[in-house]
Amino acid sequence: MTGVFNGNTPFQLPSSNDKRFKSLPPTEMLPRHETLGGYIFVCNNDTMQEDLKRQLFGLPQRYRDSVRAIQPGLPLFLYNYTTHQLHGIFEACASSFGGSNIDPTAWEDKKCRGESRFPAQVRIRIRKQCKPLEEDSFRPVLHHYDGPKFRLQLSVPEVLELLDLFTENGPP
Image 1 (cartoon, rainbow, N blue to C red):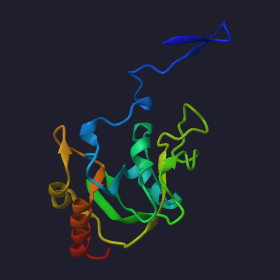
Image 2 (image 1 turned 60 degrees about the vertical axis):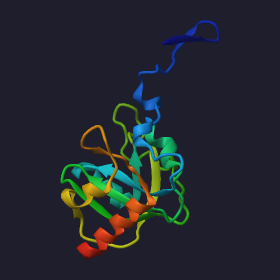
Image 3 (image 1 turned 45 degrees about the vertical axis):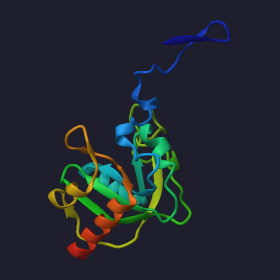
């Protein structure tokens, strides 16, 4: 949709179909009565090293509001969809709440210099280094929607089960 600024300069308004400005549908969110117990961030083989090097996890813009709910100390996990493994155990740094563009140069969008492709961000630290979990071991713990997709926001019982699985799996 095009609008007009100062009477004659056209500008582009975000349309309702623009994914960058949508928030999460209810199926991807924890029910309102449940407490956020943890969060899964997603990466692939290309972005995983940048995540760990920068000690920063990020997701696309539509996750902005849910990532803002992350508080220091919250358990975090990193799912590599290339290897189908869940890595952990991480946590939000003591000084870091979830936010937007904590580091706008991380995962820089080549089309829009200075903008991150994953602006919903949180600084992380390693809580406990464990061997990654294979998908068949952690998938039954998670809430699924739309077939194989799983919710990234975790309830307290889901986090407790994942922490147990990581402990059973042992150190790397």
